[in-house]
Amino acid sequence: MSRLVVVSNRVAKLDSTKSGSQGGLAVGVAAAMSKAGGLWFGWSGKIESAQRSEARVETAGNIDYATVSLNQVEYNQYYKGFANSVLWPLFHQRPDLMSYREVDFEGYLSVNEKMARLLLPLLRPDDTVWIHDYHLIPLGGLLRRAGITCPIGFFLHIPFPPLDLLRTVPRYRELITALMEYDLVGFQTDVDYRGFQFSVVYGLGGEALPDNCFRYRDYECKAGVYPISIETDTLREVGKTGEASEEFKRLEQSLTDRQLIVGVDRLDYSKGLPQRLRAYENLLRTQPEFIRKVVYLQVAPVSRGDVKAYADLAHQIDEQVGHIVGTYADFDWVPLRYLNRGFRRNTILAMYNLASVGYVTPLRDGMNLVAKEFVAAQDPDNPGVLVLSDMAGAADELDAALLVNPYDSEQVTQGLAEALSMPLAERKERWQSMMAVLRDNDIHHWQERFLEDLGQFR
Ligand code: F6P
Image (cartoon, rainbow, N blue to C red; front, side, top):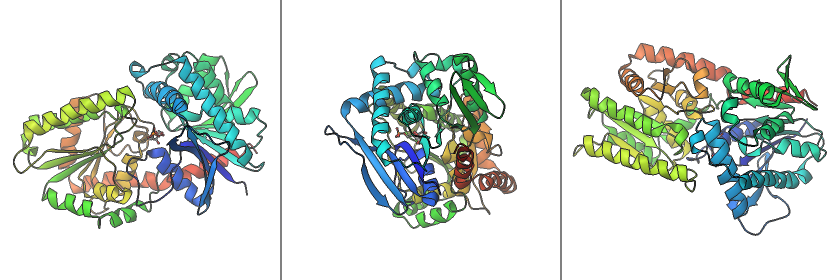
């Protein structure tokens, strides 16, 4: 059987009791790899000036973890620069936050070259290589040109932008061409797939062939839609273990009989936190019957804090939180609890189950696994309600959530009010419908579908 080689910028060891600030990619890939085993290659998360000529390999269970460090210049140009100050804002439809520098693009290419150089000696002819996310778009082509002949696939965890936005990156054609060097390119949703199709045809002048295949000059690739998912069947059990934690008990006791609204997001402008806070404030202002009856807990671990747009966002949210608390809090009630740190995964899942409302309203999101995990963590006899942005990839599958447009503050406020008052029968009906979707497409199904399609290129 072919060995699976996963490559991603972040590499995370799987431990269901840890986590907090880990994003969807790390959690999803870790769950997928726990079954298949194999090699997981990526950045160690460390910045070191002394560079090693080979990756550091550690084995845990059925997974070999091979990691490389970055030096400060590489980190600035590749991670902080091109990946997170160009691709991330642009792909999340925020060209206003994009800051392009040619030197960062060159740094991005040279870190991809370094990754290829250090990965090559670890590869075997019968491997299947699966590369993840926007940090590593050029890597597949680099491996190909270095003589690797095994199937190489790519999965984009974030949205793929419309061509009109993509064109704002001066070297956008190189990005589309680099994607075409893969055998198979996977997207979260149909909209992302169509964005790619349009870019190949109108951005490069390539052709869309039958069977989801594309051609441009000598390049040919196949593309498809593979919505990432979660470990649907086990999350409720993991959540139950979190109920024993000190943090959970303190939260539960502190609520008394108030309804809990919960949000868990990296502190990122794509998550729409200022808009979310505004809609909550509107609820307290326009529907005072909810005052003292609800508590909104927003967990938001700091992320990419050394990128200016993130520091500005943190500042803006601090002001808003202060305003809401100052305006509405009482001696014995605080309407909003805002925590800039991550928590253990089982505590978070237990919290989801305790909550009446999961408040997930990103302005744009590739998938959003918090939405899916919130659903899977619920008690079937008394499920909470998911208020979900229709700009998240998850909305395509979770159409039984209360879908809202995160730019329409009044609609979000109304969604919150409806969720807080929803009768049990309707909550159950919506939850059952969402769970059926999540059982059909869990994380293992996602992985199997992609790898089966990629296997056709052997
Ligand atoms: O797909 C996006 C992603 O890779 C997710 O894993 C997560 O939401 C985030 O980006 C992690 O960001 P970073 O690795 O920069 O902390």
